[in-house]
Length: 163
Image 1: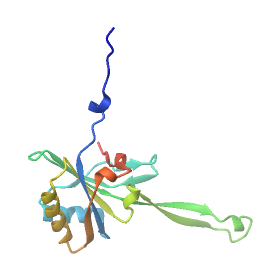
Image 2 (image 1 turned 90 degrees about the vertical axis):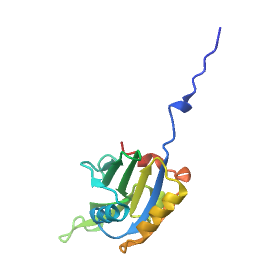
Image 3 (image 1 turned 120 degrees about the vertical axis):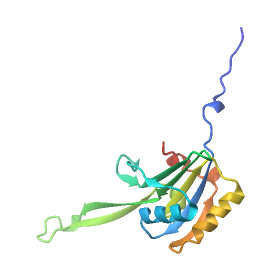
Image 4 (image 1 turned 90 degrees about the horizontal axis):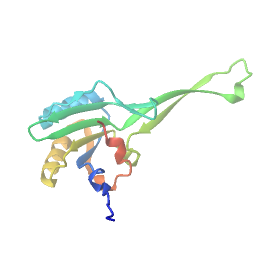
């Protein structure tokens, strides 16, 4: 009797992508506009944001499919601020009890919590092309810094699957 073996490596293929962390304080639509202008791409806001943690956190998503080079570009916000009300227990029976509003900050990729935005390019770029893109991003006045992120060392890689 012959023994058959099923190799699952064919089914669970690692997604190959380049990832750039961007530090800046401008709004997401403004950054998308500047990246479109500098990199000659056409990022546009998606109808639905990335829903994480059962609708408790959402992250804005911009996408462009480059059919000429078979690449998909995604600009995603790495931070989400959530306002929550907390009742002050010390003054529960007091005449002057109040609800305290607390702002919690969540990150899509917690390892790089300092990055405000992530630029993901499917079908990884070669190092020379990635360095050229980084230099163009760094020349934007509103960008504080930008850097390449090693995707093979990323622990929360599954957070970056958008489709």
